[in-house]
Length: 315
View 1 (tube, one colour):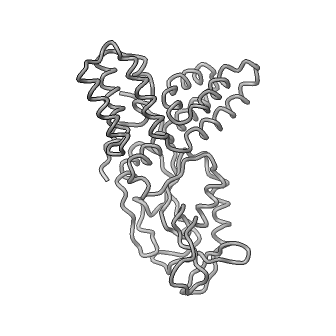
View 2 (cartoon, helix red, strand yellow):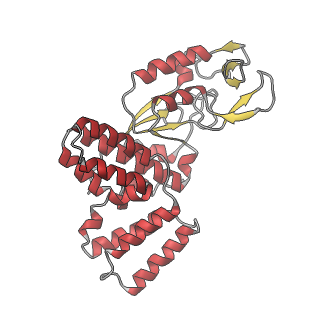
View 3 (cartoon, one colour):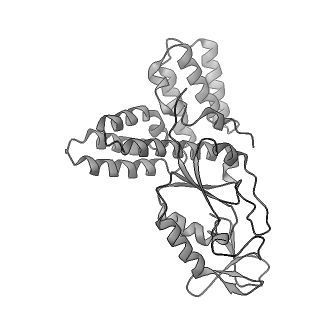
């Protein structure tokens, strides 16, 4: 069984960790519940950390003359600077994280759907945007893959998040060994994965590893990590996945049967139409690689980018 390095993930504490929402509830997330077994998690609730308590009167983001303000309409309290100060202290002492899961719609943690109001009494938001804590998280960890509990329900976005955090964690562990051979092996084993995610960045990463300019190893590794995280920042396009899967089938050209080839083509067409996730055609290639002893494919992380039980999480 493949051993995976445990990623470090920052997560909103109200998601599967504590009844600390403003109303005293906890958010259920089957994905986060499963992840607890395979990931080191750092739960945080900025609103509780600044002393607002549970339950508490809800907060609201409002438009201010010099930026958004975070206020508590029921009390008139403005906690903007208090929460910013906490965020700075917390993030400045936080270790490198491979991923971040925040609470959707939260005025402190929301990534995209936090309501932003004209004032404390407005009934409807002027627009939606990022919560106060979330905006500082994004600034602190610009290359970390960030999601929320709702995005994790989407199979494609979930696959992207899991793939990214485990690849990032593996590289981070290898980097600490300061061994060129380990980095070269990592790059070779992630060829298909990186090609699917960002073909151009894969080529740049290959040139970095080759290091014909004979630059210092530390310099190469820092640049490799930055470009790796950039390559993993966004989900691959459908067409990129299909190109990689079709190329992989070419390694099995002399082994797969005609019925198997038809099964693969059918799965690819269903994936192209958005009827299934990439997991189904990817698992077909992995099954045949095992069946026909195609070791090269089995060494590619693309076909098992994260623990198998996480791919079967039921939403």
